[in-house]
Length: 277
Image 1 (cartoon, rainbow, N blue to C red):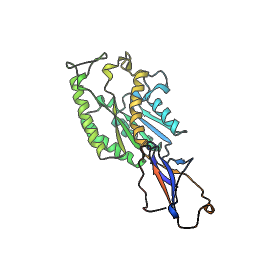
Image 2: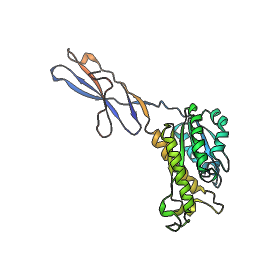
Image 3: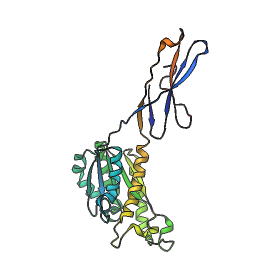
Image 4: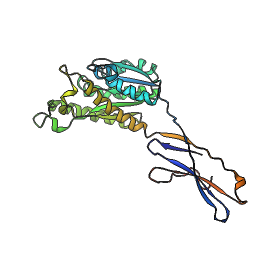
């Protein structure tokens, strides 16, 4: 038998047999084989200093390195193309479209932390739709990290050990989040990933040059992976299990065979075709 389930479902299946004279038995289908229809072989990272690894003690401790290494555990042989520069912006990303598409990406991450400062809201409004639409042909899922600022961390309202955000900065980030949310809402291949607004509480996330330390890189990567894995874990797998029944052991008569799939909560899955199999 074959059924579809997500990795979260933790499903199992059984063969239900009903026959003459009240005969009824349920046989668990053991040793199921799961086939993943999704094959991720290429990952492209876009961004600025964070995705370049500035401030990290090693490439493996950088935002991009951490994301790549975790994805590579699920999809061994994954290739990484890191297209970043110190002040990566949407304008830069548009100029690198050939390099992006040449990598045949399955996943693209964009961490535009510097772009919140370097590009105007009008540039975001006009350029991000173009970028997303031009990259749609790659078939890649695009994950964009969006900054979120807690109003409690606005200067003169509140602060943490690492300081506070200026009100003008808060307004700019809020406006750009509104723009990118509106753009992504009509593009299902674009997923927005909230990035932590706890920076004021964590002075250890940045160094004296305002670059992210290993702890800061880890915080960004963890947030991005949470968004990536949350979506990928919801994909459907094809699961197949077999059972052989010796019909000579059954009494003569009509029998009905039905495969039943149940999740970890005891919910019975809908059958694609009603009636006995």
